[in-house]
Length: 422
Image 1 (cartoon, rainbow, N blue to C red):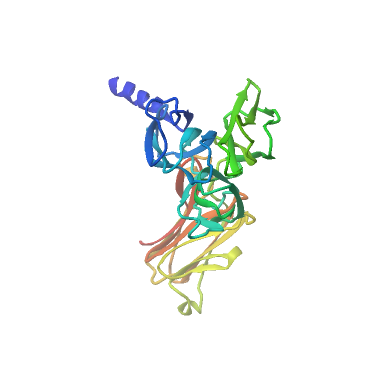
Image 2 (cartoon, one colour):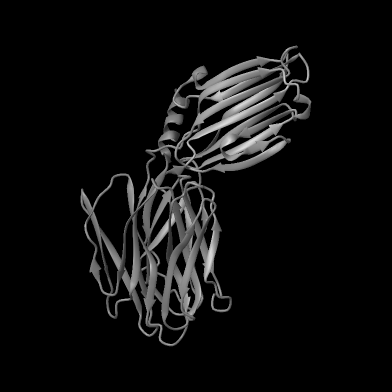
């Protein structure tokens, strides 16, 4: 009874999402005098414990930086560590004073989401016009490059944009002037379900956004993709979000000086899973047992995917990605019988929603005197997404495993053929 209570308590403590803000990086906090090399860090504790280390997204909500005048100004933000229960973030002020840097953060355990953290030092010495990053999930369709910190020597003018997004990589364009010394940003990537673009607003004056309908189980995220300043004024920019039971909007403004022109990218970040990526299901399977007079000219066995003309007939593994346009997949397995005391045991995934033995086709076929080759032709139905497959040919069989990136990443065998002794 005690063990049962403990298990329930542990389960109830596991979370998949949480959010909050960091307001301690401010002159109103005792001891915070962020200038001339000062740095401090803060540990943020989550509302519960994650099962996996979550992705952390953070966006500035208040910039209040001292007058730049003619000297350099730099502020650096970096995530030092992320665990199941907390994350640690650090601010550094190498030169002039940061009065306040307030930010909102979101922690999500979901493999449909990827976050890349970037910090580019000495960008004036080693200019960078673009940066390219590898991504893991081929089904990522949305990307935002969000500025969070910078260093300059004069006027500020930074614009980030996504110039290319493929199944394997994302490219960020960095448009800047020669005054830029340092740049910190995040690249936030997600599937169509995880990220929904709301608006992109370029402004040169304070404004109130339009009122948006609130969507449940979504975080409302406002990010900066462009920041400017004359280089002689203090940099002060803020936005405040107002939410009712059915709507949400924000006000963006400055105080005590000129408004810094900017571009804000606004998007929803979904925190639930409604459309799951599923393994391919076998619709039909046909087995041909033949006496092949040319069998000696063929390999011992091979695996073939007809739609892409892919053949694997040597021992080893290979990963491939099937295009999202391919929704019917034909797989051919050939086996050359070395003797009469062999059988071919096949397992093919046929029903994702079924349980027990109804999940798979279990087939057995035997070699004998009039049969020296066995061919299996399986036709699979696939979702309209990119399919990550690992093809493996061992000395005694072939396997196709599909990688599924949902909230968690899993692998499922869609085909397993073993060549066994009787």
